[in-house]
Image (cartoon, rainbow, N blue to C red; front, top):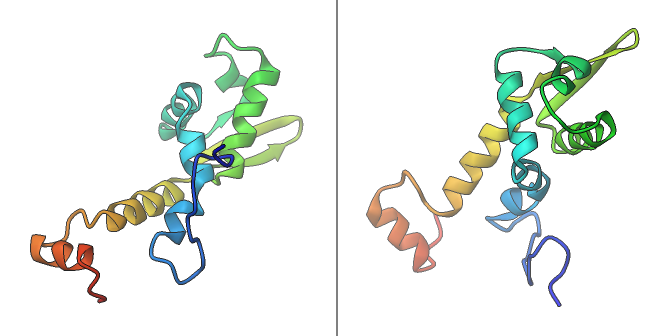
Length: 124
């Protein structure tokens, strides 16, 4: 039986090279859902109220609230209460950091010789 999250025997100690990416499984979980990705696309244009976002989706508000909570837990959005209204804003820095870490794990953007040395186990 696989553990929750689908990871098997990952060493996520702070000194492990892939720790930052694996530790951000909440970001990948948030991005995995098409509704949450659509919410993020809407927020690229600027901050929006929960109601304005909800008006664009067929799901009921409690379902969308659960989506907002997943996005907040992943730190992909921030929420600010203004009276009885909640305003959501996109936090792109978390997404950018996660993608940079993921690219680093696979040595994307590095010279081929350097990536090969890393695969062979040579430390930096």
